[in-house]
Length: 308
View 1 (cartoon, rainbow, N blue to C red):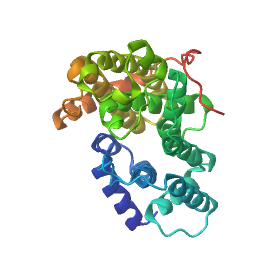
View 2: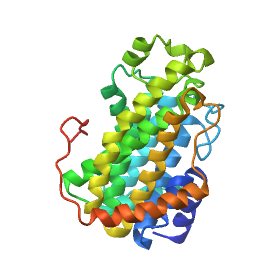
View 3: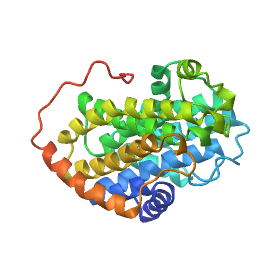
View 4: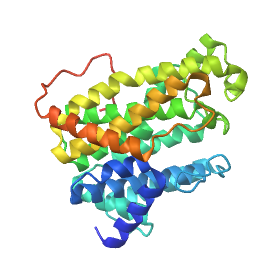
């Protein structure tokens, strides 16, 4: 993994995700290199699909020719995983990570399956449908990150996937109005129907009270996945467990703040301050240490199960 690729990946994560950037500094050097390089590929794919830069400018992004963009990403991913020569830094990064950690092509392609749902304008009738989307855009990323940390056991990978699902449910709750402004809705239509909220009026302030109830419902739905992920920390190296516990704490707090703000949750983007991140980082150290002594509880059968 050369220095130029690492520099590109590090810049990508510092600009695109301050929450994960904070957590990634806790990894050992080898794991951090691979984690930030995998992130760089994920960030690049997201930007290409939404016509944005480092996660910014989504509202005005050019999303024309989405199917062609997606196919180009699939082709470049296939070439990268096959070991072919690739010129785009993000795909060179993916290639290096996949080769170093034995990540099979089906996992990066499953990530692109999530973006395919956006391109197709898919609607999600039930929470299970929404979780299928969450798996593609986030759950399988958690799984690949766990492989970077040395995990291979299917039960551990399930827990890592659960954390990705929880992260994405949190993101959806935080970004309901922002997503609606570009014509996207990840809330189950069953929930919208129960609340009498027309899908094309999600961003309308008149529905904020009802929308707050649904956001709280999403945050609550994320909780058992956060709990499952916490149990999985015991199977990661201690420094990796600390990093993941930190990211878990930061994202979970964002969700809890969305819920606490109620109808005002979308007046300004919910985030955590530098001081918040430091506090959660310290707390996560205790969580990681405690995980060394935890028991191996069975994963609840009621949780959504990733594809095998």
